[in-house]
Length: 455
Image (cartoon, rainbow, N blue to C red; front, top):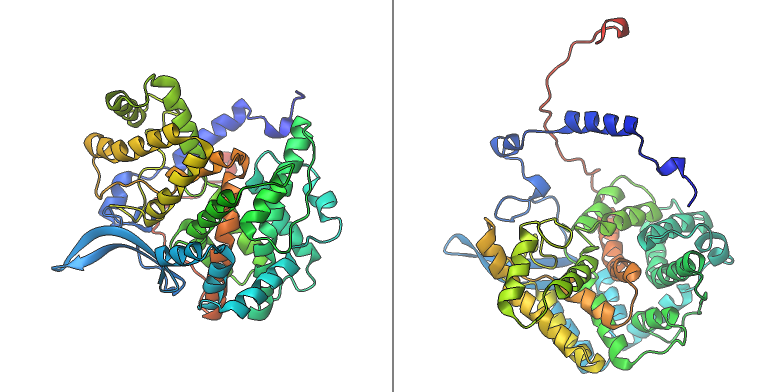
């Protein structure tokens, strides 16, 4: 490998970084003394009220006898319980992502004619500009698909004659185009990566106009374009569960913050992608897969509860896996008793495990789901309950579908672009001020000295 001076961290840079870190350190006690809500949440997990939204609602508590009481989590899109939405379209043997996208964007469930017209509109926009694959996606393919996706989104700005127009009809047009194109940008980016970095055959399949988003993802990815009905339907459910989660989640909040500045759609969505890329937000399911692989390599009998419990304790004590002190897939900023997305998803995951012959692996996941919260409560001082979250099983599903790990987070983005689009429309519709929260300075005043007098 050739030496890359642009990637080198020199001793001088290390010294400067240490100096910078020292100047940035703030006494943790000050956050308590000044009642600063780190992460915009208090110790009980209650978030600071930073805005209003009617797009979705995350419910984890109720007021009972004037006391905030945890409940099993519920998730609502435009007033509809997500469980009811999924039960509705799956019981009628339909795909739901397009229907729920319509709901998020327009505030109502479509009738049959409206849904058919919307699907046609998505199919119409599911075409990249001429030579875009050659000139953008094939050039310097990144090893990280989220960076590839963000770069492609920013490049689409150059192909849009009205890129900076933030009138609602134009922004809606841009958002629907991005919703349509995210599967292509993600999968084509991965195909270019594996071709140029590993010499694999390059597959650039055209999408099917009559296919759902979930079907197209599998069609675009697989060399033979084949998939089973159950595979496509479970991926569709995964997309619906991931497409929106309230205005306070990190990437939706990013969309609101950046949109409030008046910037263009491509910049706002690229910023949201940067947020989702972070392992504390969208990358957790990859960590779950890696953690479970490490568990199997260190526990000879995965049915031995004592051995599995001991491994989970070693995770928390920073003695196993990546030594970060975390059981990935456990805990959530809002939910304490249960994550509704995980509860809904698990019903479908069991069916997929049976079709794929992965019942034993599914049983291990179920065991960790049961033991994990207990271990955390025993080993850590916590201020609210701990439950399994949706990322715990989504990685298992994607692995069962033979999706590459590089696409786990981009597929999350394929789902969440619908929510981001709705939040961008909401921010622009309400003519709000630029979002600028307060930060209290805690440094001391300094006296200026001429350069010749500085030590």
